[in-house]
Image 1 (cartoon, rainbow, N blue to C red):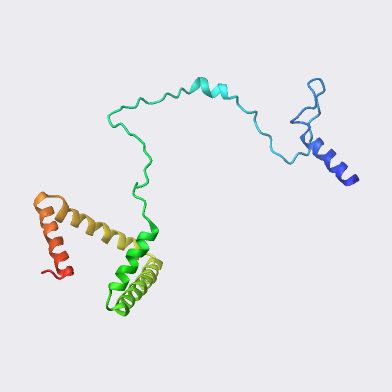
Image 2: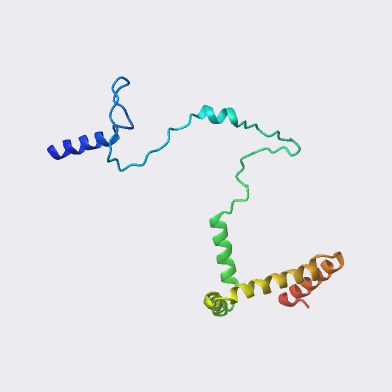
Amino acid sequence: MAAAASTSMAATAVFASRFPLSSTIKATPARCSSLPYLPPRLSPTAFSSSLKFTEPKRSSLLPVKASSSEESGAVDSSELLTDLKEKWDALDNKSTVLIYGGGAIVAVWLSSIIVGAINSVPLLPKIMELVGLGYTGWFVYRYLLFKSSRKELVEDLEQLKKKIAGTE
């Protein structure tokens, strides 16, 4: 009990210089305060007079109306599961699908290991970034910049889709 009383008296002595007990009694500043001196707080009215915030005017060119609907694009989980079960039952070679899925997971894992190893070489990541930026610039110039080249890109993608689907 005596230790608690001496601790509270010491804390009172440390904070006495910052928090006077009354307006008539001034406490003497404590000489061994471990807290740094902080300047007094500025009042909020000092900021409000110098800064004026105004609400920007909004144009009503695109009126937005909110509505609640049950069919707002939410996916029904039971419908999704039944659809997946139907597609899984319709497959003939389930083992092939599992092998391809496992192979894809292993390929992603190996590629992450290779990228991590390349990233640990000091200068190689920056060179790879430059190569990527160069290829991106070339691709934009070759396929996206002009209308005729965009048409060519769409035709190439359609041919690729036909090859993958087996309709060609």
